[in-house]
Amino acid sequence: MSAPAAISDFDAIAARLRRWAAELGFQRVGISDILLDEDAGHLRDWLQRGLYGTMQWMARNDDKRMQPERLAPGALRVVSVALDYGDDDDEQARQTLADGRRAYVARYALGRDYHKLMRQRLQKLATRLAEEIGPFGYRAFVDSAPVLERALARNGGIGWIGKHTCLIDRNGGSWFFLGEIYIDLPLPVDNPAQAHCGSCARCIETCPTRAIIAPYRLDARRCISYLTIEHEGAIPEELRPAIGNRIFGCDDCQLICPWNKFAKRSGESDFRARHRLDKASLVELFAWDEEAFLRRTEGSAIRRSGHERWLRNIAVALGNAPAAADIITALNARRGHPSALVREHVAWALARQQARIMDTS
Image (cartoon, rainbow, N blue to C red; front, side, top):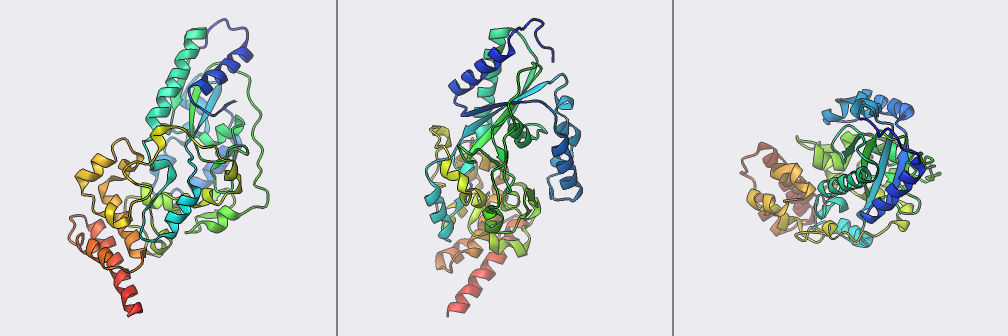
């Protein structure tokens, strides 16, 4: 990275960056330095306690995560951006969670994958700046490298890290994506956001699996998002009942957060629900074969889980669903699935369904 030799007004450059970012659809922009000493200590302790589960990538390159200049030599500042994805559907989300026959997919995954959209816009932002001032050093990231994005965004004033570990903007809630550009320009930095959770502990109290073991401390091994998306093996039996009908991710801690009454509603058509994922039944989605799964999840964050884990997750949800003949029929159709992982979860779900029927007979 090497900055242009002669720039006289970095304040003006920062102002232009903010204006261009808004024109590209980003709702928030923050500029921070690259110092993360306190957050590095928090991360180091979290890793040492093994709270990252099987996410080995969290333990790799931790030096680059804690020291941005190791990831992007020459970087002096981080431009963080936020893109709203929330829709006016909080009540609908709660209704889905309350209906044990329907499938719950985390709000962020209902539409198209945000990574490509945000990367393209970040590249446009960097290109626009280069056209204005000449070549400069930069690297853009959207979940594509070891980046402590929430800490950097907090330091840039975008929001504070809540007790559930999500970032919260007091004027816009927490339903937004983050992206970053590491740059070698000494732009003026913003004031870090101050925390406003106060004594509220609703997110801790509402977590179905008690994954938030203390304020600002998440045990990923108990987190439904981790279990249904990142975890590759069997879901621990003791946690399966608490998963309910959540088949890909979990939003409970955000749905309960009082600050989300200020959440901004996104106008991005790419983030609208596809293939009825906001209304579909568990039986309907369980019937997708691998070809249908791959076709209907093209361009979606859901595809990363793969068809095997998709079936595993839905089998758990079917085991938690109210007793019904069509659910048992759907589970029986998968009893001989080639995957031992799927068969094990189907057997568990069938036992739960049959026990429920016995209890009501």
